[in-house]
Image 1: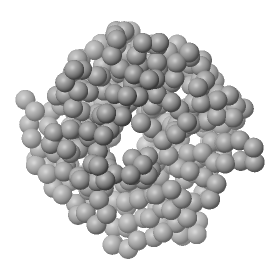
Image 2: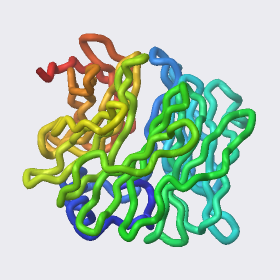
Image 3: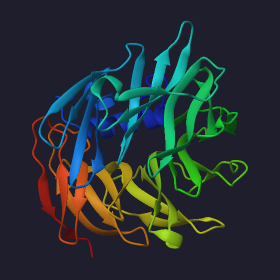
Length: 364
């Protein structure tokens, strides 16, 4: 589900999740297409630069039509990229002499190609098994990170550290101790005032549940379920603040198994408790991610029928207000580049694809 080959799903979730992947992705998609490549945009909305990263090779597609090829260090595997107006924050792992280490890099736009990629400092780690490093950024500023860490792939804790330019990384904290079951699919979000949250899926002995922890100014809150306990898998969560200004609300979306297929659900934090909103989409929907673009909050997810991606614009209540369907036979997540009240401009992930202007479909 995430780019952590040794983090293992619970047996029940594994069987159902694999079925979902085989159903939603084309039969020709190889393992590298599911796990790697990275496809992301950065820069200004009217002149975006596209990043295509496969294993250790990064290709930048510039607004003027030129391309640049960059090689990452051979011992580094990048798992995620967070784009902003100045470039990308890259997160992954590096192979050290006798163990794995966290790796953070900054890929800057407009820089000399030889100096575009710079390695960044990383939090301290002690255990041998590290995976799913998630960077917490806001407006291009690195505020912190969270990751799984443990002595082996079957026993990982959720760890996190804060970052600021003056003092560097704080001492890592344990957000959630290692559990009897697996903990996977880590995601996180932050906003400029320093507020942060991380979510993940944890096996409770029967099925997978979605857990969340919030940064409360001095420490991380105790992990809690975002929904009532049940007996079906809840998997691959995403988290973001939805809305603008003082009206922003911390929102979590994830896929819940039903007899008709996985279905996206959402819940919102009201300051005291998580208030579930129920099913957000029809069955056959997985892999949600949030994005912020031109003042709007977008939720992009995969749907089974028709096999495609959906880019949805959320209203202030976190409900789908408008949506556009992106046909993509390669099964890779598209990138939304610009939007207005009538349409959204989307670039499919397929090599050589052109930007599509898709008219919003009202979901009311």
